[in-house]
Length: 198
Length: 346
Image (cartoon, rainbow over all chains, first blue to last red):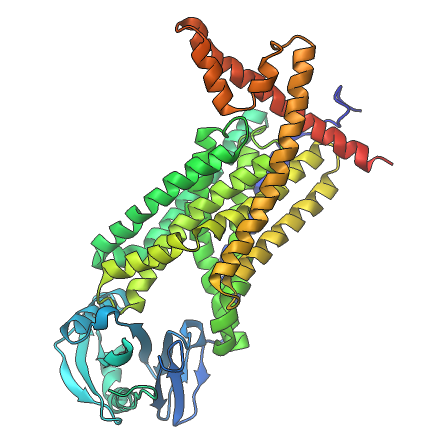
């Protein structure tokens, strides 16, 4: 049977509800499906001792760092251009490339790192900075972080001539820190800038 | 279930999905609001001009008369809440999967372009479909689908710009959050805005318009295939946009050109058909002979209106214009469906 326009009649209510169910189904499958599938795949890539990794967007704008034994990488939170997410036992460490507009460094960079810690680890406070010297001889800043049953270290090593810095934040439950402290310091001191002159 | 109840069910569900998307976004960025309240506010305020100007321009793209204001707003809201919120979770899942299975070096170059098109284009298109379901007769053909798709994409684009601004605070070491937000905005609005999400969803939305047109003619299967084709085209545009090459200016230009050509084609086709309908109205005496030449132009209608003496008669003219143009749109839609029937008859 056709209507007077020559077009077939429709059943809009049934079609509407079917359409609604299809939309809800598609949205649920995509929103929940990918995260659930993601949970089924391991997020731990063990790294061989003395593995050297590079972080940063380009040849000049990058840094290298080396890990000792016992470290693994979490690929889901890693993007070599911007950040590595590493793990050693119960300790989590992020190694991030940050660009410093207008050559910001010193107190301004440390204050920025304090706010980044507040975002990435709510309830944790970054203390005052102390000087640190990398194996390459470059000066940086290091400070302790604590709160919410966690503690750890944070470091900034900047390359002002290229307008960027590498920030490392290592956090673990208090009991797990001593066992990882030396390994963490070694990674922090291993940061080097292949393209940096000062 | 009566039509009214089923429509209300769709509208309530759409509202609930928008609320869900908003909750996801607020949950995800709540810490930024606590630590950087000023820059977050700045990031939001900076998007207002894009939203207002984009909304105004996109509604003007519809020849003869703009789509209904309330549903235009609804499309933008869907894009900025339900679609953006769900995409945030889905993208995190798929991006992580790429990094875990294909390696972080591959993922840093390709995971965005292999994840975002798949999730985001579908979520945004669901908004156009929801409008079809919640407001029957509003989207009558491909041109309406294009406009509502573009509006949905605009909402998504504005919210995504805010999130990029907040991400940039972290990428600049939080040394100058206001600068980070502003520089991200300059890049996203200044150079990529004309070829971003609104263009992709406009193309996908066109497919929904074709689906309606073909369904009207009883050729739903062909319509579905066509809609799928437009969705895939939108995904391809998005993949190109997120790919590491070529330069962003080229990618923006390509996406803008695609939607521009599609729009000109659909607009020309609509105006030809609508003018034919108006001429037939004039011939049969439904409208005054001179009205057929002026009704399709907003400017001509305003000019005609100024010639009517102030008073009740002038006040009734816009409503009369609306009734005629609504009827024209219905007849254009029937004409399009009849063309489909004629071209697919065997």
